[in-house]
Image 1 (cartoon, rainbow, N blue to C red):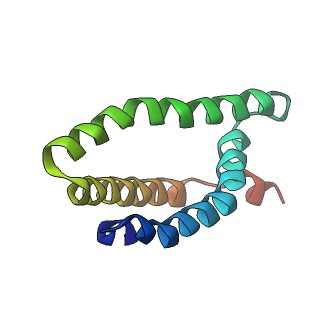
Image 2 (spheres, rainbow, N blue to C red; image 1 turned 60 degrees about the vertical axis):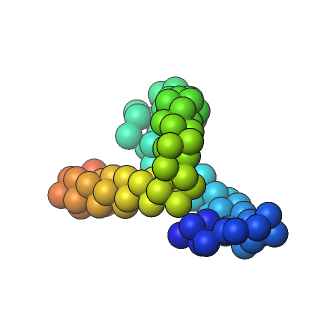
Image 3 (spheres, rainbow, N blue to C red; image 1 turned 45 degrees about the horizontal axis):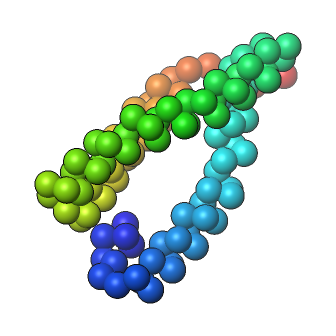
Amino acid sequence: ITLMFVTSDWHLIIPALGCGFGHALLFPCIVSLGSGDFPPEHRATGTTVVLASIDLGTVLTAPMLGYLIDNFGFRIMFCVSSSLILTFAVIYAVLKYTAADEEMLAG
């Protein structure tokens, strides 16, 4: 959200620190959650799929975000990106909340 208010280069310091801190906290969790659905003997494959999916998502969305920036500006791009992330987070939370956790049931 703070990226929407950047008007000078030095304004990027706080959003960059926040993004770096968030990435450091979330990256191991995301890889663990993504590979956790694979059987133990295939967890390495699961990790590879998660890491490849992150890169594929970057390759696919970068041109779309560039189009938004070129035609509508940075603020619209950040609003669209934030809205999509929030939408998918809610969908994921609803779907994951209704799914039974096998590890919790086994204990």
